[in-house]
Image 1 (tube, rainbow, N blue to C red):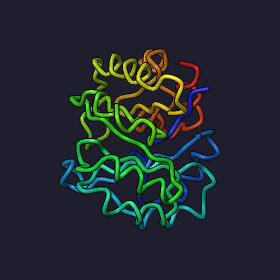
Image 2 (image 1 turned 45 degrees about the vertical axis):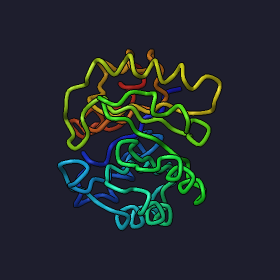
Image 3 (image 1 turned 180 degrees about the vertical axis):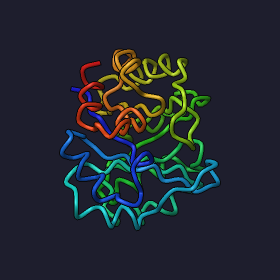
Image 4 (image 1 turned 90 degrees about the vertical axis):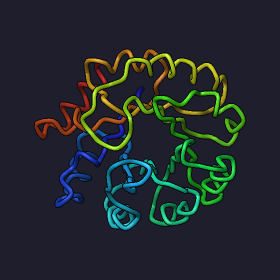
Amino acid sequence: MVKISPSLLSADFANMQKEVSALEKAGADWLHFDVMDGCFVPNLTFGPGLIKAIRPHSKLIFDVHLMIVEPEKKIEWFAKSGADIITVHAEACRHLDRALSEIRKYRCRAGVSLNPATAPEVLEYVLDKTDLILVMSVNPGFGGQKFIDSQLEKIAQVKKMIGQRAIEIEVDGGINKANAAKVISAGADVLVAGTAVFDGGKYKQNIEALRKA
């Protein structure tokens, strides 16, 4: 069954503990933390301090997406804050192989994210060190953007590249009940959704709608 990882970028930051509890009760599988530094992407969100503060209040998988420059220098921060999965951008890593090894050193699952314009071929020589591939279906930096249809083909290409490896495909950006079926059919295992989950405060209903779609 497809996993749903709500993006906390759409949560009420003033009531984060309450939001996390509500999402867990609503049936979320993972929690997606969009870490932005204002350099790699034109937005600034939060750091390891928030993840550490929330960790004692949830048993869900903490899915930490680093949209930051030189992420390899900060992997230890997020691993020790309570991340279960740490995803770095291929575009931000000078030494991607080394970064993935560093993530696994801290016994976290290692993920690689690809921006919409990045070809899947950059993954070819790091697949055996990768646990998760995150296909960005919008240009990263802001929530509420429209899904880029060309990424469906990329998802299918990534699925083919993986072969029999135990690697999950996650898709982030513009996911809603209107396009979820296409994304899953292309090969997605995990859907990141912000607006589609938080809309109207009906978390359980929205998560179930994504699953049914």
